[in-house]
Image (cartoon, rainbow, N blue to C red; front, top):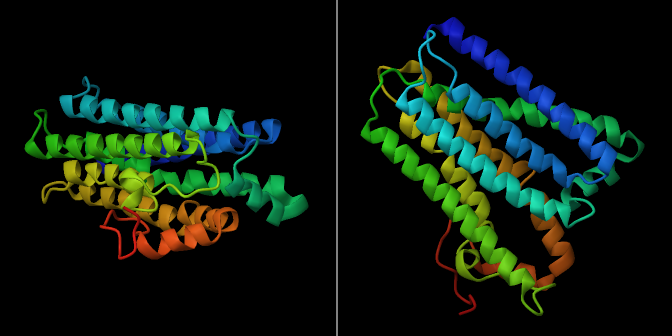
Length: 271
C-alpha cells in the first residue's frame, strides 16, 4: 500500500470517530446518563477498527491477517461494550462524568461535546494501529501474528475475569461500602485497566518489522491507552470517587496494593 492509502485511511478513521462521538454526545444529552458515552466509544472503536482491518488492499480480498485482527477487535468491542452497557442500564449517571458536569456548570453541554471530540481525536491512534497491523504486507500468518492474537486474547480474558470478580464482590451481602481486594483485585487496584492496556500491545507485536516502517506507529496505541487510563479519565477520577465513598478502607487498600501492574500485595495485605 502507498503512503497516500495510509493517510487516506487515517483521515477516514478520524472523520468516522468524530461523527460517532458526536452521536454519543446526543445520546448523553437526551438520556442524562453519561455512562452511555463509554458504551458508544467502545463500539465505535470496535466498528471503525474492524472496518479498517478489513479494508481491501488494492482491490483484493482481505488476507488471513486482516480477518484475524478484525475478529479479535470485534470480540474485544463486543465483550467490553456489552459489559459497560449492562452496567450503565442499572445507573442514573456515571459518577466520573457527573463530576465533570458539576464542575463545568452551565457550560456543561458545550464542554461535554468538546470533551467527547477530544476522545475521538485521542482514539485515532487506536483505530489506526489496528489498520496498520492488519495491513502488514504478506499473505500468510507468522509467529508474530499468533503471539499478537495470544496477547489480545489474554487481555480480553483477564479484563473479563476482573470485571466478573468485582461484580460478584458487589453482589455479596455487605459488599456495598467495602473495598474489593479478592482475586486479581488483591494484586492490582485496577486489574481491568491493566488487561485493557495489555490487549493493545497486540498490534505492535503483529506490526513491528524492520521492513515495515508504518509498523512503528502502532506503539502509539498502548502508549495512549496507558496515558488515558493512568492520568486522565481512568484511574484519577475513580480513585477520587473511591476515597470519597470508602475513606480509610480505600487508603489502606492503596497502601498495600499496586495501582496498575499486578504485583504481590505489600506487607499488611489481607489473606
